[in-house]
Length: 212
Ligand code: SF4
Image: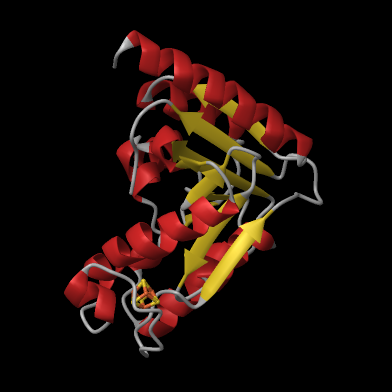
């Protein structure tokens, strides 16, 4: 990374951390995936049960494996053998100790913006788990809510549609058609502008490109 880019990212990171804290969210800015993993392990109690909502960024820093190795109880919906068992685990995750996720976008003012199809991820973000730890690459920081909406609708959602389904307009064209397809992954759009419970949401902002 060029020095000028690092300098800009460091200044931006400090600003976003300050603005997240003003919204009663805990926040940290780190340089690397390795530092992000270390900070996340510090923030998550060893006895907390762990759930997650399908985050590429969480996977990229190796957090799930590190928590399992440390002995935290893991609620892994992908380990379910039946749809009923998967549904049960997803409900158990709503009252877990720490929920892991990223954010689809974070504004410079410290607002979080997330889009969800099944809604299990945004449900856990809003209410339930004692703590939410977010791993967020600097690539997800945007100027404002208009930019957050545009990023998520025109980039994140079509990429996720390409991962999870093939019947939405965006999975065929790469652009959002504001569809009402039964497979749409754009059912819930959640803006988090404040945490009523101080420091329940902990954002680790990383000066690397993570997720999408
Ligand atoms: S609204 Fe439909 S077309 Fe647009 S991104 Fe979401 S799933 Fe794709």
